[in-house]
Image (cartoon, rainbow, N blue to C red; front, side, top):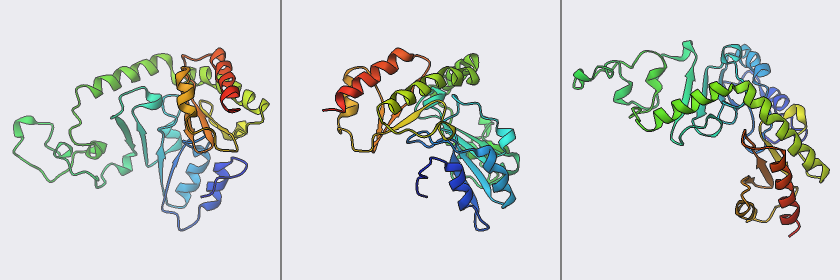
Length: 253
């Protein structure tokens, strides 16, 4: 699907839905520039077609409140790092109750019905574990990653996701204002994420721009001609000013 000129991914996806649609697999926010997809608006349309809704929440879970019971996806996935602040090799899967008896991709021993009873290690079972546990990865007993992920989730819950969003959103708005003042395009506010943003330069920047900025303690992602800026709770408006002061210098060279 081509990128919509007005940044309205929701409307573009709605126009692509028809009776042939079987699965709609979408994020809440586009990974390159934060383009917003209104999954609440799309969910009933997907269900009306008899299609499955699969959400990739990797770009939002932990920074934007997400009400899965209200949205009602068939599946939802998210990496454990990024906004969930956990270890790189960790991920999460949600399966709706009516999807918890499916056929898993990985036929791991630990996903079998008898795997929780280690005294019966040789009593292999063809039956899968009840519920979404059957979809779990093999060797999930990771004694390093699991406590790290737990600590990260506890911290996020202590801060609260709504408070995290409310703290980051003004910084993103400041990035947008500073970019637009310089003639740098951004997605219009109604169609973009509240917690990260893409700066569309309109021309390829210096290929070593991330390295130049990194040498100054400024870390952003370069996605083609788009600079992705993702502030967090440790940033403030002084950091935004420093970012654009550096961009003013490096984009001229």
